[in-house]
Image (cartoon, rainbow, N blue to C red; front, side, top):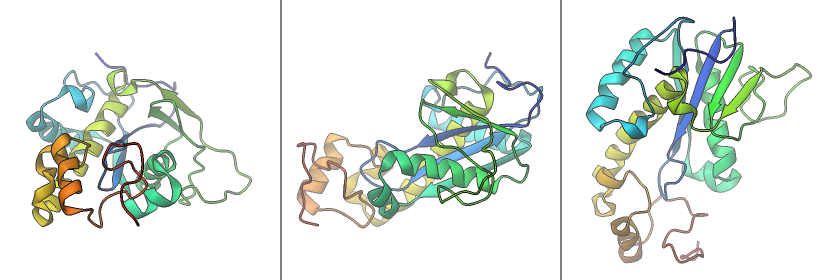
Length: 213
């Protein structure tokens, strides 16, 4: 059973992202706040669940959460600020949209930047103190709110990539969701890149930028 909270007696938001390792598409992140005593034995790291089960759980999460939101950072922004900063910015954007304001944050992974609850993303902050936050390696398999955030980020990003696949079917995004599969890279080699590809990524897997941008 995953834990319901990390911080005692505080309104706590769990955050996770999806699409960080992709060659194409936006990076998505979600933030979820559950009731303090919330329990759900079905919640787990999104990577451990089938697509059908993730979609079923998304409905349950959205019903049961006190607040939830999804943040998005585009491929153009990723190329400007790098994928680590983009992933954190997506989490900040999700936190900005929560209808209930968190008092603390737990994050999957080991990297984060202070969040000041001012709706300014990663922009310059004022003198207020940031919200308490804790990064937790493999947190999506340890805490309910992070697991829920991983499911929301994954399913909303998958829906987005499915829409892009209709526009560019040759890249097999219905199956690979933008990740660097052999078929995806072969399509890049044959057809070139789309407006959704991340130009600063090693698109052909040869250790270098493969196109004259």
